[in-house]
Length: 233
Image 1 (cartoon, rainbow, N blue to C red):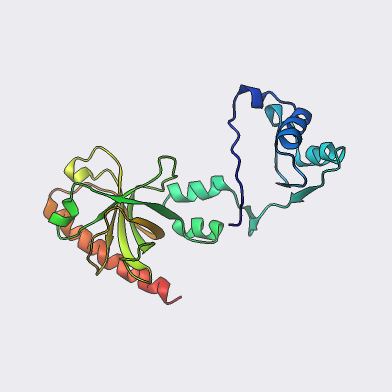
Image 2 (cartoon, rainbow, N blue to C red):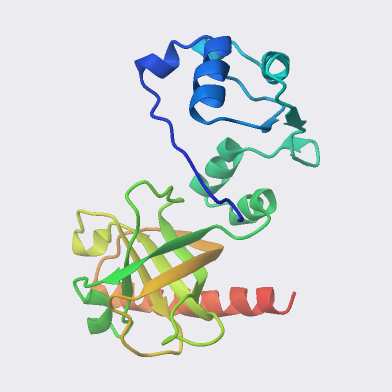
């Protein structure tokens, strides 16, 4: 994205009690030595979020620091925000999330060893270990594109991802498992990026492994159909 340096400030009591003027003087000028500032029009800062973007512009002007106030991004009449994107993902509304983001939502992680249940069913999966703070969408089954491994292919491959606790086998922990369609190979310890293209169905518990196997086959066929349509767009 072109960002050369990112600084994360812990939101502790000391930071929370700074007045807007003290925040600018202490944090932006003394510590960060800001030369130019750019914030969104709805930016808030200082104790109890009392400072506005216009306040920042006025306070910084006393120190000769220019402030660029950026207008909100809109999609039609709606404001584009992280909250609306998260809500769309929680509802499994990938089309809406993609509209707001300008791209499909993606997950990146390292492939680690799992219980190999998919292999016994004839659908081997890559168990993806994701960052602990990664925002996850609605549990269920997704049609995905798989990127990032030289051993996979030069072009992204189609896949099916299950995000959930695998209730049919009494799973206790949430897992992220990807079955790459029409491909075989070893992905352990490789880093993959999975682009979520379509939500297929919620996670559900099946009466038997045979029923689960039949549903996985149906999911694979559904994913191929959805992904082929997207490829032709």
